[in-house]
Amino acid sequence: MLLNNRITVKRTSSCVIYLSLVLIGCEDSQPIVDIGTTGNVNFSSYVAIGNSFTAGIQSNALFSSGQKYSYPILIAEQARRAGASLSFTQPLLVDPGIGGRMRISKLLPLTIVSDPFGDPTSPAIYVDPTLPANGYNNLGIPYARVYNALTGQNDVLDTLNSSTKSFSPSYGQIPFFHIVLRNTNGSQPGNTGSVFQQAKKLNPTIMTVWFGNNDILGYSTSGGIMPYTPTPSFMAAYGAMIDSLRSTGAKLVLGTIPNVTAIPLFTTLKWFIPDPDDPSKPFANTFIPLYAEKSDGTNGYLSAKDLVLLTGADSLLSGYGLPLFTGLPNAGQPLGNQFVLDSAEIAISQSVTEAYNNVIRSKEDAGNIAVVDFYSIFNDIAQNGKVVSGQIFTTAYVSGGIFTLDGVHPTSQAQGFIANEFVRAINSKWGASIPFVDILNLPGLPVPLTKLSRPITLADIPSTQIRAAMKVWQ
Image 1 (spheres, rainbow, N blue to C red):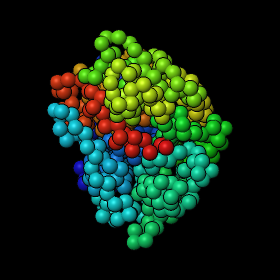
Image 2 (cartoon, one colour):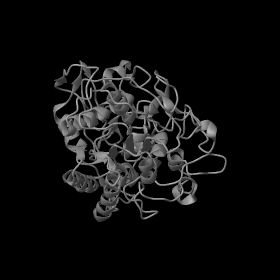
Image 3 (cartoon, rainbow, N blue to C red):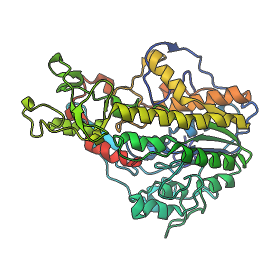
């Protein structure tokens, strides 16, 4: 493998999964192969468009040792195995990258720390500071949305200089647009143009487009406080984006949006007072509901239909949401609305997600477009489970193998699951036989967390760090 922005990652596979849901149950025993064909697909110029999942963020940061397992680079390598000749470039960042990478410094007691934030304005942040002549093949940008309320535009089509978009006060000093697009800024060389314009310069022959998660995720991760993109705005912006991308003549593979409430950020903590040694179990084996602020502004008790976010762990530890008998400093005070997605907000999140997905699914009729229905695929996996070559994957926070430490972004192995679903769609649509990624050959989390001798406790959950990670969508 080449340790620069033209990485070659050699992987093949037997199974398909993705980051959103649980994987326990029937086993996928598909044989691993090393050869294949690309069918009716020309892979000479493959471009990936998306957000943080496409970019390869792990544990709240963008860094090279995670980026080199992004699903686009895995797809590119599998296409090479099938005979394609292509170069695939990414804006690889020197570890620990930017964002404040979360990592485990100690297993017992479990201790999660954040690495320093690299300087995104320095050319030295890049593994290879030389910018490809026409921009990168991986144009996944964390924070990017189908409809950006601050600009009133689609982030793929928006031509606003990326350094302005990344570092202006209204954007909260976000560096990722400039890291990927590198529109000229001071001493850093750069390419001009939007995501679409840079993609077009690469004369793409096939593109993967997985976009839209951030338009609803900010609403959900803020406990229903941040606005989501209205469906009509999403429909218009997504349609304009697809029309523009189709004008390149490239084949497009689109992805629908998974159920954003089915990730550890929402499923680890429960609606009842937790056992201090295991927050998945009730205190004293009794289901006593938490007391919290609801979406309508009233305070009341939660039920099994409500979700408590990981970001509220330290508030629970200090007594918010708990009764007076606990003796904690803030006992008797409601848990804040920003830490709860109540049943009404869950219904909004799910209905908006399905509306977005109907927009995405409708594009398959346009011709030369395949759609990977991640929403349906992973709802099915959640019900029926999955085992990969005898190894069980779950959505458990930290130890499940699917999610990194921020509770949202996929591990390298989960990136392999995602790559395989795109490969499956390409094979089916265009008569290819591209081999699948061997998921168990990809690294999991860098510590053998399955060997933890006890459950994760409230004190183990780095909620302040996770709150910082949520700024990606808020």
